[in-house]
Image (cartoon, rainbow over all chains, first blue to last red):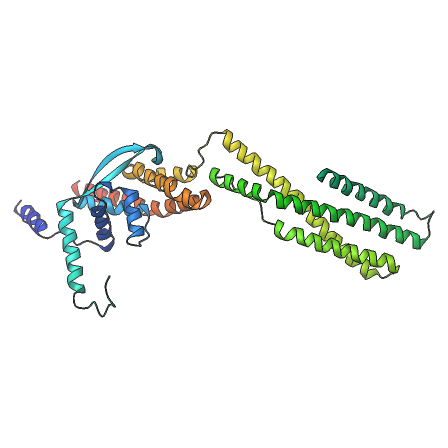
Amino acid sequence: MFYLVSMQSRKNEKCDPLGEFETLVLLAVVRLQNDAYGMRIHQELETRAERQCSYGALYTTLDRLEQKGYVSSSVGEPTPERGGRAKKFFRIESAGKAALRQSCGATRRMVQGIEAQLGGVS
Amino acid sequence: MIKVQYYLTGGMSVLGLAVMWSGLLPLLLGKSHRQWLQDCGALIILMGLWVMTQIMHAEIRESAPTMLRLRRLCDSYGVPYSLNSCNRWICPLMFTTVSLAITIRAAAMILRTEHQSLRYACMVLEAVCVFGSVIFATRSRSVGNVLDKLESVIHSGKLPDSPPAGAKFILLLIPKRNREHLIGDLEEEYRTILVPEYGVRKARTWYWWQVAISIGPLLWAHVKRGAAIAWLWKRVR
């Protein structure tokens, strides 16, 4: 029991490190706010991040993030252009925000001071 | 005007054939006369072919916008447009070969030469002309087939931009948890972005590609989850 509680508290302090694709997906969810569903996230990744990915990979990642408690999902209304199928909207949770902060912070700290060597970071 | 041209072509072909066959009457005519008549008949037929090529050329030029509209219609209804663009080279080829054949035949007739190589060259050119005519004939039949398909699709009331049914069927393999949303996302992108921007053919290819690359990760995740549950169950027992 004690072990479980201590593990939980440690988990709260430090969350699982995010992978590159997970970070991009989370950033897309944050960016899209209330309109974050599969197609829009896919579009955002393709246009903004210039990252080609399959819907399969995207949904697997979103499922993983949901299991970790970084995002939550809700089902929207069905629309005719989707053949009467409902959208699944995603929202970032506080644990997700923390993980994102940690991941982005680590990248920023690592890049700091070597921008010139990288030829300028945009 | 076109009708007159068609009658002219038909009349010339019949006349040419008649003259050619008359040249084969060995009992009535001498060898030199026979040869002359055969040349003359072939020349009349070639001139008929030349007129026909000209008519076809004019018709193709006039029908170009119609064919373009047909292609667009096929694209929007997802009917494969299987017509090749042979018009660009067939008409000039036929013009050239017919003109060459006419020149050679006329030269042979006027000079009354017995040179066989000229006649063989002429026969090759005529064969090319016949080949061109056959291509035109098959093309007309293909247009008919495409129109038939288009008509059946329109009458069946199928939506012009629905994704391929086969691919949607494969997507049933996806775990139920994400199936509806994933199919909906694919369909929305297909209908709202891909079809208007790239046309049905490319959109369908994209859809199939997405299905092919999406099914792997989802099934693998499902298998892993199943394996983990089985392992846990084994441990608990």
